[in-house]
Length: 276
Image (cartoon, rainbow, N blue to C red):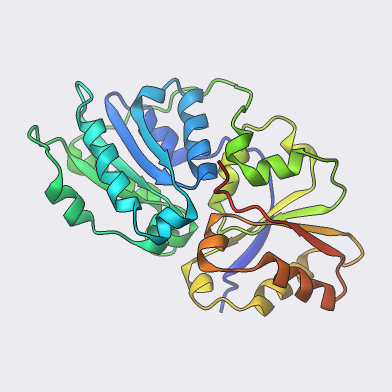
């Protein structure tokens, strides 16, 4: 059986390819809620593509997700997006947290005032859904249903990231000189919001990638064993957390304790991607 968790070295790739494709289309809007880090990444991609007028986004707290308020805010953002002149369609760009906490699409759509019958679709993306259907395939189906032949991707402009205040694990990496191997504990998608941060690649930065099966049957030993197989034990290790880890209750402190038991010098910074 294949390993449900892997570790990868961070590399600048441009990030958020599916989002870039959506924002390259004329008069297509994106609605999204998520952690501040997730929303920061979306804002950066929109800015690079000169498409900031096409996004309707809101950063939520862990408490707001726990109370199920993501549905309320998605509906409010949809109402704003539908008011934009010449809109051909709206895509709700669902984050890992939306996948985990779930919400009723039908209820949201029933309560909307959509007199012009503007098409609306929900695109679930990220590592927690790729096992079932890759987001690119879902997006292609949306274009086909809407009768849209997607235009080529716009060329991204190079910008200096100024949203570190929204990306607490990005801020942690750059706030002090770090000699450790830095490991971000994430399903995998969170690192896309680090793509535009200047000099981020100078650090020894790594991240986990895992799917919904791993998360639903999570046991610290499997994560510790994967880390031990990847990193030399004589090199210090720094763990950083993300929003999914916060919501499902995975403790970085406990992970560090387990790693020390198998011979690592490990510490953590209590990041979670929700910082405002």
